[in-house]
Image (cartoon, rainbow, N blue to C red):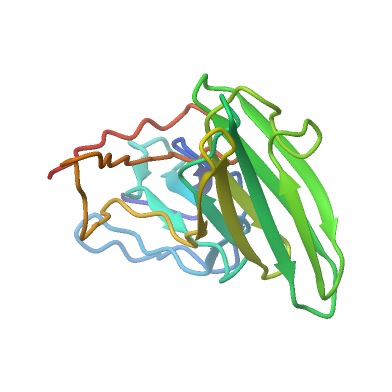
Length: 219
């Protein structure tokens, strides 16, 4: 975009998740090459999906960057695609803070009805905490299925266990630290008595419902 010193730069989250503050310490290129002005020194305060827009005065057509993802520092964001407190299911979250300082932790349960339940807590230094999502105050309470996002001010470890108390069946997993457009699974089975379930979650940490994901599954 042809620009001058009156150019302004703004940050927006086109949807999904992330509300951050744009820090703009660099300058705008005063030389336009092939209609392109160069921005420098931009940083975003929070993880999420964003677009940077440039506008100018005198008014020209605004220019947007492609959507880009700002990742969280390692250990500060954990994602789980599956969780349930419906029927006889119980969902446990296990949190470990191995640091020498306390961690502020926000747990978001994104339910299949489109609503969210959040739980905030302080995880003391070098401590462990167990949350039972079936308990209101620690989770959404009974009768829900959901995905889970955990955001922490310090690197922590997060693990999950789901237990069906009716048939004494359970499984556990360590959370993912990344979001991705592509996932691969080496095994699946529907023969005999086997059933294969695939759970997907589109986390909306700060802007629920703004970004819809279209998902294709190939077997």
